[in-house]
Length: 300
Length: 269
Image 1: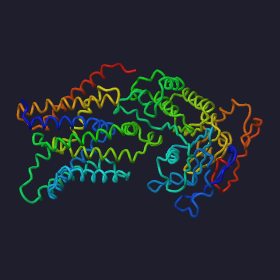
Image 2: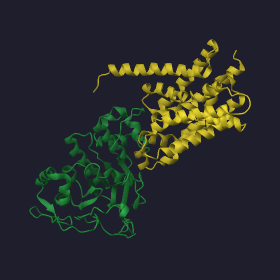
Image 3: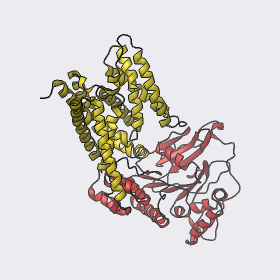
Image 4: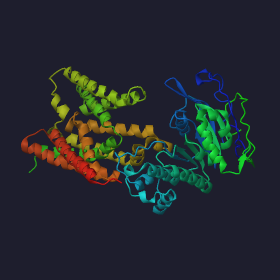
C-alpha cells in the first residue's frame, strides 16, 4: 500500500473501455494500482456480476476526508451496487476495498420503506443508533429541519421527512464518511437544492467526507468536489464541469443534461482547469476524443 | 381449588406466553411468520426422530427445527425463486414427511393429535421446569440482543452499514425461535405454535407506539388468553391449546377492527 501525500487533485480522466473488457475475461492482477490507504475508503478493480450480467467492471474509487464525491450514472448503471460493496453489504466478485481503520459511516439508504410493522417514533429510531442526549437530538433535528417530526411514528412520515430523519440519524453518529444513496427521492425540487446545500454546509463544519449517489445532475454537481460518472465501468471522473463536457457524459445523459448543466454554469464567473484550479470562464476543458486505454482514476 | 394438573398447565402456558412475546414481536416485525410456520411444521419429523431414538421429543423437534431453519437460510441465498414460494412448498412437504415418519415408528400407533394440537393438561412437573428455566435463558438472550435485533428489524442494510453483525444476530434469533417452538410444541402443538407467538403480537400492534410497549402488551394479551383459554377448556371441556389460540385470535380480530375503524375516521394529512 502506498502512502500518498496531500489531497487528491481531481482531474479529468477519461477512458475508452472496449466492449470486451468484462471481468471474466480479465487476466493478471486484479488491480493495477495499490489502494490509497490515506483515503477513507479506497477500492480497486471492483467487479460484480449477477445472473451473468456485469454490473461493475474494474471500478476504482477513492473517497478522501472533507471531499464530496458524487457518483452519477443512468438507472441500472450499478451505482447502488458499488455503494453496497463499499459499505461491505455486498462482496465483490473481484477487487479489494480498503476502509480506513477509524472509518465511521453515516448511511442514508436509498430505500426506506417506512415500515409500519414496527411501532417506533422518530425519537426512538434516532436513539437506536447510539446514546444521545435530548438536546443533541433536538439540535440535529433542527439542523435538518425535522424538529416537528420527533414524536411522530416512523410509518407516518412523508418521503421528504423520512429522508431528513435518516440524515439526522446518520449525522448523530458523528461520522467521518457520510454516504447518501439518491437522497432526494421523495423530496420536491426546491427541497433538493436545500438538502445539498445543507450537506455541503455540514461538511464544511464537521469535516466528513461525502459519497453522494444520484442520477440527477446539475444541482448535485454544483456542490461536488469530484464527480464520477458510472455506467458499469467508470466512464469519466474529475471536476464537475470537466465531466459535464466529456463526450461519454453527453452520450449517457443526452442533450437535455448538457443544457441543464449549462444553466448551472451560467451562475458562475469562472470555471476550473484540469487540476481544479479556477480559471477564466471562456476557457474550456479539453475533454478530448483521444481515448486513453486506462480506467479513470479520480486520484490521479 | 385448582387441581395440580391444571396448575401445571397454567404455569407452563403463562411462562410460555411471556417468553413468546418478544420472539413473536420480532417474527412480526421481520415478516418471518411463514418461516416460523415451516420450521414448526417440520417439527413433526423431529417428533418421529425423538420417538425412534427413544428420547424426549422436545430434543428431536429442536434438532429438526434447527436443521430446517439452516436449510431455509441456505435456500434463501439463491435469488431465483422467492423464499415464500419455497416456504409454501416446504411446509406441506415437512408435514407430509412428519406424518409418514411417525406412522412408521414401531410399536403402539402414535397419537398425532397430541403433537399437532398440543396437550396442555398433560405437562409434567419436569416440563414446567424446562419451560421456566429455558424460558428465562431465552428471555435473557433476547434482552441482551435487543438493540441489534431491533436495528436489523428496522432496516437491515442500515444496521449492517453501521456495524451490526447481521449473520450472527440473525442466527442467534433463529436458534432462539427454534428453542421456543420445540418447548411450546407440547402445549399448543406444532400446528398452532406459531399462532401462539404471532397472534398476540398482531393484536398488540395497533395499540402500540413503541417496540417496548408492543412486547409488554403482547405478553399481557397472551397471558390473558392463556387464563381465559384454560378456563374455557375446563368449563366446556374443549381442547386446551386450541382454546388459548382461539381467544388470542378473537382479541386480534377486535384489535384489528378497532384499528381499521379509527384509521377510516382519521383525517389524513
